[in-house]
Image 1 (cartoon, rainbow, N blue to C red):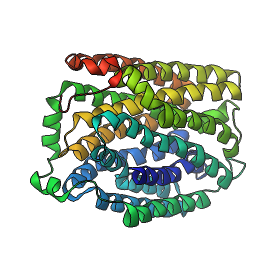
Image 2 (image 1 turned 135 degrees about the horizontal axis):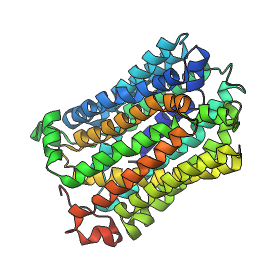
Image 3 (image 1 turned 180 degrees about the vertical axis):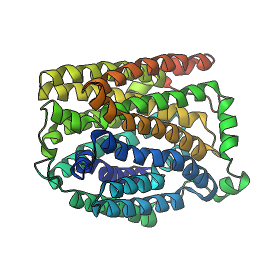
Length: 406
């Protein structure tokens, strides 16, 4: 399991390196704010179509070969991005990388394969901590490699470093990762089709609510996260990529602490459902506080609000991942997690694609107001998830256990 976490960490650092500069590089090549965020959205749109396929293929052929293919695709995508000289090249590179991004759902399935229900939230928390660390190290590296100014940000060097990190993750998979899905499990039951997976999911109310919740959460995250560099420039929070580094590091540290150290004890004490609800409330309030701090150009205020937002995100994401993986069975876990990530990326892609237009056409704070409103909807879904678990008294008493297939 620790090797799988390391793989996700290396690949996600490469992804996070591009966060402080990608939107502004598109602007530098002549894109409008709407087109710039649309270029970023193409990555998650590609993921939406690809992740269910990769998940199903991992159920049939094993986790390791799919990780090899997806990471090799990430290397190619970053190299192409590094040599982009026009907006369409940025768009194509992000779409291709999104189509190759099957490693997340497969890594989640891998971790679920090798853990018990009792340890699932802690294990998913370790994956989440890898995300958090990546959002500490990645933006810091990206800001340092890109330079001091948005106007002449260097994209090629960060892209090549990202390619190198994905290549390192690929080598770790090839030489160190052991397959988690036995041959017997792959051949006993043929991987279900997408329609069969949907039908199976449709019979499980709790799982349907969780899939709706991950869509809503990622829609909100797409609104507030991808527009942040442009918003920070407009509110005088930052004047170049390096200025974003301390703010993003603070949020990343908070996420690492919650997902790496606190999520296990918190889950045992309160259960995933309660943590999911608390995270939705905290995320929504923090998004509103970001706008308040931005109005006064307060860097400490924005940093504090983003820390709260990161903690809320950590609670929501880890809880949803754990609950969803518990609902799945061994023979369809890759497909279910693929569907989970596909719906999440669809939501994030939609939010990312629209947020630039909301920023430019409505108000600079509009993406954050929308994100906070969506958290209210997420809270309602999180409250509804409780109903199917009435028979499982342990879940609401702090163990977070969920019956398989409920």
